[in-house]
Image 1 (cartoon, one colour):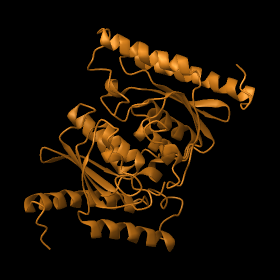
Image 2 (cartoon, rainbow over the protein chains, first blue to last red; image 1 turned 45 degrees about the horizontal axis):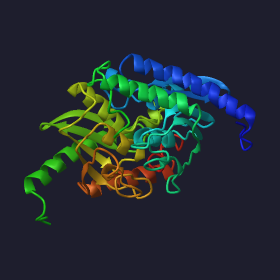
Image 3 (cartoon, chains in turn green, brown; image 1 turned 30 degrees about the horizontal axis):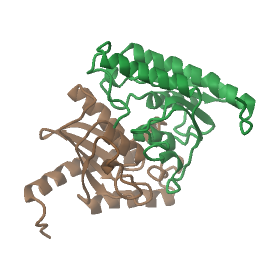
Image 4 (cartoon, rainbow over the protein chains, first blue to last red; image 1 turned 180 degrees about the vertical axis):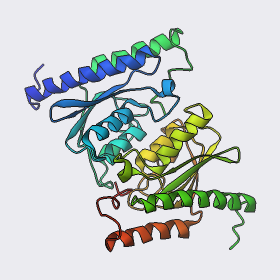
Length: 174
Length: 174
């Protein structure tokens, strides 16, 4: 269905990069972590990738977005990620939304929303608060069905015991 | 002045650990980063320390709290920091408040507040939102004057050019 309010090319570009974020998310799935993936694009190039490794690393900080921000800062050589776009399969939590603001990323493209704990519009919107000195442009629903299906497949696997309960499960619900 | 609503011993203990957080903050000052320090205590022992290294590391993630959480998770061997108390000289930003919730830290002790950008009561309180599945107990104002003075001394140094403007200055205002 054509969306007149979008530039066709931009929409296609967003889908292209979201596909790469989905590839990252599948890596998390494989290792038993909730399947969330992320890429950061700068001047038309993917400069950083990340996937959720919270259980693998035994570290709450190992969300896809945080790992990608770390890599992107190393590539750019600055804590300011101005000019970058983040593509992430699931709406970021409060920590990751905070990290996006702190690193001055101007635009975030989200696959599917996280009604229970998302902090970019669902529970709260930390990306667009007038009180903070940086606000982030958000595009939602890019490859939403694929991003959402990956999550529900994972949780179905969890329920039938195909994934160790201690590994997956609670990410993104806090 | 006696505070009847506090247990005297706990107050003294809090001050003891906040002093150690202040020692960390001074390390940040020395290297030209906004002086914010943090320690994490578990079963009466300091298991992790951190100080702001954002400019030094060229990384928005290098806030004192994030660095301390990383170390504490390594010591405990779990992403869940249940039973830990965090002592931090300045009210955490939205990213660090998010990381505190994500790592399930039950209690945070704060030196001075950050009216412009603090996310534990000033601009917003991410530590106590009924929507999230973890809420954090907060104690404020421990060694407040010392924590606050360290910040104002730093910004005075910045203004007179004793610290490189590109290094310090904007931390905690986003």
